[in-house]
Amino acid sequence: MLVKPEAAPALFSGLYALGSLSAADQDAFPALIRRDGSVVDLRRALDDATLTMLGVMEDWDRLSATFAELADRPAGDSPFVDAFQVHAPIAPRQVLQSGANYRRHVIDLHVAHRDGSDGLSAEEARAEAAEIMDRRATEDLPYVFIGLPSSITGPYDDVVLPRWAEKPDWELELAAVIGRPAFQVPVEQALDHVAGYTIANDLTDRATVFRRDMPQIGTDWLRSKNAPGFTPLGPWIVPAQSIASPDDLQVTLELNGETMQDESTKDMIFSVARLVSYISQNVRLLPGDLVLTGSPAGNGMHWGRLLRDGDVMDATITGLGAQRTRCVAEVTA
Image (cartoon, rainbow, N blue to C red; front, side):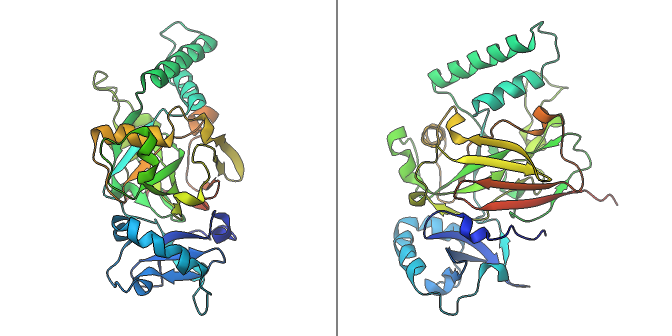
């Protein structure tokens, strides 16, 4: 595990954030982290020895009312977050992922994946992709698929690159955490069902995205996105009321200190509210579920530089804290 970014607790917006922490050789516990970095063990504060972060989300309307009070109490003898290991803030039941949701990113990918058989110049291909994006936005048809909770890992854990992954890539994303069940909710009410936001890095092996042996079927998200540890999550869940607008946050990823992604969520084709509403027309969203909102321009395919052993990714989203993960090659037996 890499050393956490300095002053990580101070990077989140609002009075407090939520996370999952553990002391050495002990089970993880749901925690409230104050602005000064002091920690409240929610199991003790709420007198529930079996409480998990998923349980917090299942009782969000009641419990969240007490969190501001807990955050405002004097720290006293509360330990500081640096004394603990930081895990992914929640273990969700469902992970819903939006693809092709940043205009410039999709245009870049459209050009990068061309094989030249269409006879279009790069400029013509970009124009074609832009037209497709405009049509999707007008028709209100986000592209959403299902991820696996088993791919989630902590915000400072090593990311193992599978030996079969020829083109592993980064995709930093804003993730919404559901706090109320949502089914067939209108756009205007969708954000009422979001408890908070966190950071997700949705790693993808570009070489296995498309099934070359079955082009009629198309994408293979199982293999390309769901290897163990391919979704570093966290460090914190920042309550929605602490984020002024999820549609105006800066998403920044550095690879070995060099900025690769640096884009505002303003570039999203479908806002968080539109995504949550759209998903809820088809799926019953449950407390603790994650809605990943897509990744902006600047992935490895754009730069012609994919992930390899020893790479370090530093990732931030305005008000949500910071991740630091190191890539390690899978050790073969």
